[in-house]
Image (cartoon, rainbow, N blue to C red):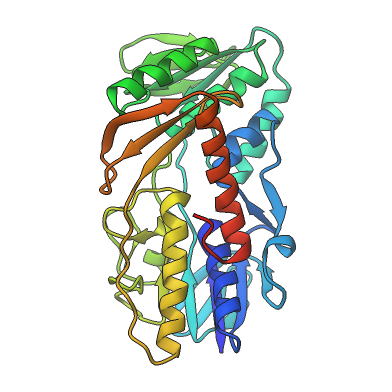
Amino acid sequence: MQVVVVGSGYSGTLVANRVARKVKDAEVTVINPRPDFVERVRLHQQIAGTYSAATPLAEVLREGITARVGTVDKIGDSTIALADGERIDFDYAFLAVGSTVSPIPGTVPVGTWEGAQQARAALGRLTSGDHVTVIGGGPTGIETAAEIAEARPDLRVRLIGSSVGGGLSDGAYRRVRAGLERLTVEIIDDEVAEVGSGAADVVRLRSGREMATDLTLWAIVSGVPDLAARSGLEVDARGRAVVDEFLRSVSDQRIFAVGDCAAVPGARFACYTALPQAIHAADNFARLLAGRKPKPHSFPYFSRGLSLGRKDAIAQFTHTDDTVRRTYFAGRTAVALKEMATHSAFSSARAGVSSF
């Protein structure tokens, strides 16, 4: 039985390993645009030079899984069409291509491996007193700004977002901003109109304010790859593959979709939600092959974590629907929990089992 997994991020790697472990006669092929598994939640560390976020696929995929480096052009009719013209047949497929970013001109995206590498190289060329501007007041922007500020205290780091730290409880919101300020990150609650270039780069805000910048990083996740739509699968308004309660495409039940690219009701972009989806989809696949009924997917939220450099973090507790509770804690205990969760995500993907 030929099983093809498109994408080898957290969800794709986990589902491939779990299928290979649970379905003994499955011949699993993973197709990924690069030969490495990238820990996306550590890209801010990759940029700052405090961690290497890439591990060769050969070290994370189970023995017997075939890894194919390539770009998928289309999926459908039991065939995967690659951009180089090769075609790979499948009996079942898992779509796990994650999410993507659409940076504005003049910025470097931090949510992709290629962007992170470009940002790391550019950061290394900066000298004392230069300005780094991070655009995006959500978790990616906060973690990126904090990591750079701690690793390079000689630089002037600013973070711009319509509401930096918004979406947290009042106490956690204040604590995040205090943590950023301790790292001397300038917080600007505004929106960026454009990044201009000339004799010197400049960031222009909606309010009309302008400021010089030597490196501008785009830290906003804005959508998903258009593979599902391009393949004729039904997608939602954000381009995510529409799935049934068992995580199968409503257009083709031989195709499962998991992670950021799947339109799972209530799910947000995060490996925190992608990993349980991957586990559930792989288990449903095994159930179907064994002649058993698949089970509907459900996932209760519990918390959110934010790193503020290597020595500080926030753990925000949530209700099961992901709305925030008043309860949070911060400091070294939160650092330990955030690191444990990040390591568990990697371990889960690598082992094909749940570490949560």
